[in-house]
Length: 234
Image 1 (cartoon, rainbow, N blue to C red):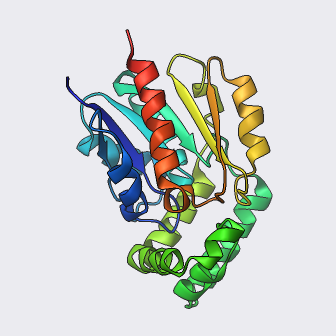
Image 2 (image 1 turned 90 degrees about the vertical axis):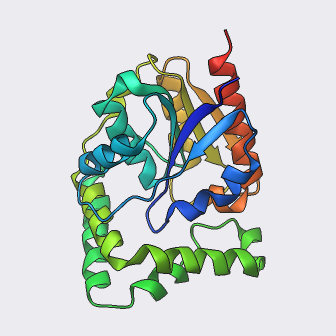
């Protein structure tokens, strides 16, 4: 049996390494592709980059910022997408307040201190994860590899992205994944979205914050594998 191809897109301040443990936990029936997202300033350019390297047809998952790129991929090539998963993410555009906060963050990053600022916040973590020094160390290494250039470019891409909620119309199997302790993308937002998307599937992972792929990779892998198996069944 040919494995299903799954493309996973990382979030802001994350390289593809955020999915290392998820990829390792996936069954043989799922073949993961985890590209890095380069320093491009629109989600459309990033979508084109992803599509150039992706298999002809694939399941698509986007974590946080990667979800914004995933929606642009769906917009660009809906015929290639077998299903879309938004992981601690959503399809809407930034609000004016969110865009203003990103502009402030860009200004701060340009003044230096990006690494310390990006790694100092505990908001992305479940409280229990803060007692896992190996997790904190991995997070810092990922942020360092990601770098300020990509951060600024991807913040600009966030600000410029349009609302693509209308693309989630039930024509593609849709998985929405949240956690019990996400303080970046509120679980309530995903629950409301699930109620509006025909045939969507909502999954909530316990004991994780926003950094679900790092904090609970096996649980995320199980959710993704089950969704693909159900969607691929005759």
